[in-house]
Image 1 (cartoon, rainbow, N blue to C red):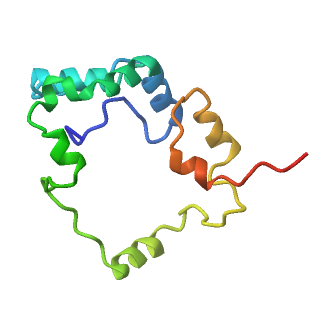
Image 2: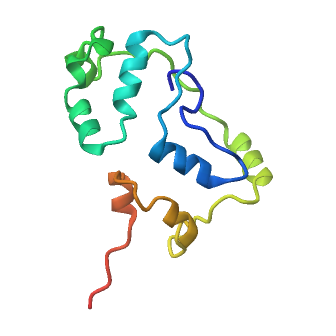
Length: 140
């Protein structure tokens, strides 16, 4: 988000290059980034989940966020720095028509294949939204 670029190497023809890069390589940062921005990105992209959790828990005290009034932000009294334009339904339909490989929205069909699931085997984060979307386990 800070640069508009991926911090990890990837190859459109080989998913394993991205996975390897995320798991084992140091992210690349453009030279134009300030020291503070680079520092926060290095902390947030740390390979060790416990370290990242500790970092996020103390994020308010980090110099990068000094200008944020956290009480005002949490109370919803801070205007966003920009707002995204909501795409029209017509625009979304055009995108859907041009994308035949869009995933199924059938709740009975798994969203990822077994091969795709395997790509995320060692990832530790699970979105709370994803957990609520999962069907309850079958009774035995």
